[in-house]
Length: 204
Figure (cartoon, rainbow, N blue to C red):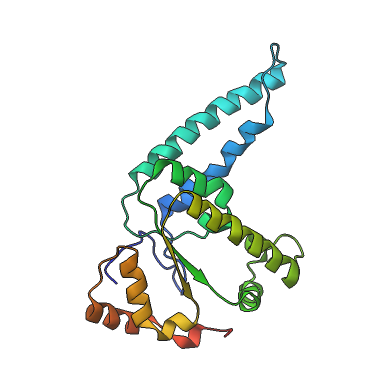
């Protein structure tokens, strides 16, 4: 619809578009949390010295991550890690970017759970043999903390609901415009109609 996310669809797939650089940033952010495991002492064993050398390397990694966050110039990016690992990823972006806005896609959780199972994405989105009810409870808590973080940092956000959004281009257009994406209504509608495919919605 006129904006490039920087990512591509894998061959034979109908989902994706995550930017490789953004995914790389968010996948490396949590390594820095290892630093919190260590405390300062006056004397160190060889093993401790090796750990602190590793910490120094992680600090350098952290600095490179921050530089990359500041350098991202795509107007639109997509990565589930902003939500799934908000504690590690979102903080770093919030501290180093002042132009963040979020479009949050929501869905009936029962259908999301079925979709995870169908695609065999349990290792990515579920914790062990997580039941539907346990997963829903975790998602509700994560959602509250995620939105709380956005509100506390005065970051604009909007919601769209899937799959109802497929038949509601007018609302899509209004929502994207509120987020600051200038899209010609007619050209956007033409593109939207070419993109959507209801047959790919397995659970409604």
